[in-house]
Image (spheres, rainbow, N blue to C red):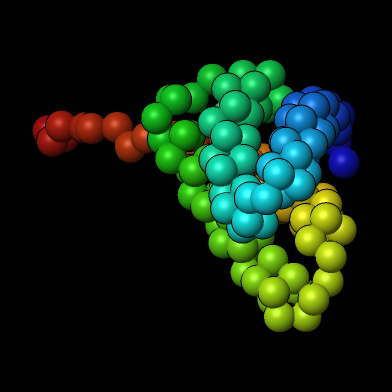
Length: 138
């Protein structure tokens, strides 16, 4: 891993650890209070996406590209993560009976790595350029 990627990964890790620790505690509190597991995950997942975009764009990846397209790619990435999270909870918890606290904790680690890779190589990629309009050549 090059120095830039290592720095990105470490900054991403700080954002992710702080965010996910708070969100996981909120998940445990909501489910302990009786909220259904997948509903709690859905609400907190949306909150997590919203709160981490700015930190990851500006600090973790130091991306100076356009805000809008990066946010769309960010949401697509997290949408994919959400579907994987939801399906895994359905299969592993609802169908196979594994404890949701452990399953969700492990999913958070898996998804963090997957989302780092998507952000590094797609969402906040430094070589994304917009096509430029050129007139006819004479």
